[in-house]
Length: 425
Image (cartoon, rainbow, N blue to C red; front, side):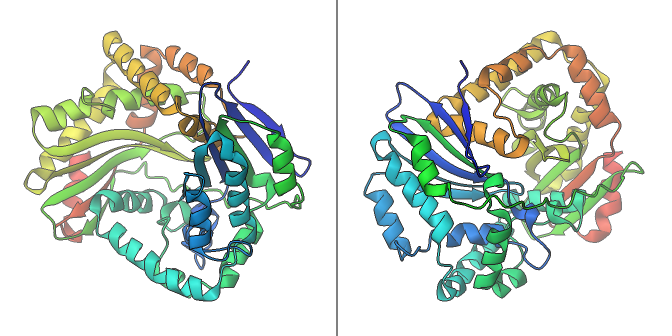
C-alpha cells in the first residue's frame, strides 16, 4: 500500500492524502497549477500579489485579523508561497482542528473580497518587498540568471513582478487572474498527518460546487539557442561581495535521466563535502557559500552553481567553478564518491518527507506539475539505480554540449562582459 491516496471529485478537483498513524498534527494545503508563468506583461506580479490579498478578508471573516484570530484560535500556523508554475496555501494545526483549517483555507480562496482600499494599501507592502529583494544580491541573482536564460517571457520575469504593474493593479486585475486559472482542474487539496472524520465529504461540501471550467495553458517556453557560445549578464551594484550563477540548460521535470541529473548535481554542490564546496571554499577560500542545483520546469530546466565570492578574486572563482563543471563531464565520478552522493540525496529526501508537512508538499508538487504523486519508495529506488555511466552520460549531454551562462551582481561594468565571457570558454 502506498503512502499517497488520490481521489478526484466529479468536477475534476483532486484530493491527495497521506495519513500518518503516529502524527498528532495535520497539514492542509490548497495547491494550484498556476503561478507567475501564467501572467501577461501587463499583469506581471499579480500571482504573488494575489497571494497577499487572500489573507486580507472574506465575506464571513471581513479582516486579516479575523482570519488570523481563527487560525490562532486553533494553535495553527498558516502561510502561502508563489512559484513560477504553482501557488500554495496551507494551514498546519493539531489533527482535531482539521475541519476549521480547511474551512478557513477554502473561504480565503473562494470568498476573498479584494477590497480596493486594501489593494491600494498592500501595494506599498509589495513595493517594499521588491526593494528588499532587489537589494539582496543573494536572492536577486537568481532573477538575473533567469532573465539571461529565458529572456523577455514569463519564465524570465521576476515572480514579484514590476513596480509599474503592481501599482497599476486593481480589484478587476485579481478577479481576471483568479477567474481564469483558479479552477478545479488546476487545484489539488492535500492533507497529511492525523486525518479523522469524513475528509472527502468535507471537501465535497466546500468545493464540490465549483464549475469544472477549462482554463487552457500558458504559452510554451521559447528557448533561444546559445550553442554559439557563452553568455554573460551583469547587474552593476556597489558591494563588497560578488554574487554569481554559472549554469547550462538541462532537462525539464519529466525526463528519463532526472535522477542521474540529481545525483550529478549532488556530487557537484550539495553538502560540505561536495566538489564545489571543497574546491571553492575549503581549498581556495573564495566564497562563503557555494552550491549547485538543478531547477526544472515542465518544459525547461537549468543546472547551475551559485556562490558569493570575493570581488578581488572573481576571475579565479569563475574559472574554478567552470573547471569543476568541465571535469565532471570529462572524467567518470569514482564509485565511492557516487555512493556517497547517492546517500546524501536519499538522506535529504528522507528528512524532507518525514513530517506531514514535508510529505504532502513533495506529493503535491509532483501531482500539480506532473499529474502523478510519486511514492517516496520509488524515489529511493530510482536513486539507487543510478550508475557511474549514467552520471557521466548526463554530464556530457548537459554540460559538455551546452554553452555556459554567467549572471553576475557586483561592482562591475557592462563593458566587462567580454572579459567574463572569455573565462567561461
